[in-house]
Image (tube, rainbow, N blue to C red):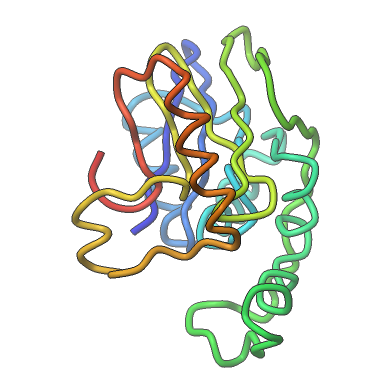
Length: 193
């Protein structure tokens, strides 16, 4: 139930997040094939495995895909078990369904924490957000906001009842930060846009 974004760069594309399972990765590859696109980059909004586990399948098919994240979230992407030990009071990954023990993480090639960046010739704004995770990022591209888990849709809130935040005060600041940008369309990480 994790959304991904795709920025079309002609024949190649940039993925925003990559799903939370190998099946998600397979579904993404199938969609890209149908659209005659290949992934050249993937931006991970934050280091929770449900946003990057699908990269295992994608990187197997396209090993040259460059992976981007924030500097702090890089540790979680490359070492996914840190999520359990830092957020869930050392809950064993064995107790969390659909988390394969062989998953050792994904290498992050580049980091950025804020400001305007250019990937594959496409300019986008990286917005630092620290309410949901220590240094998650949102991507603003041509008026479309890929918000990661900073924002939740109404159906998602109805399903989860209470979103997960590591810092409520920072979450309020995140909302203030986002209000300073001109956003035409928002794609939250879970639920409908």
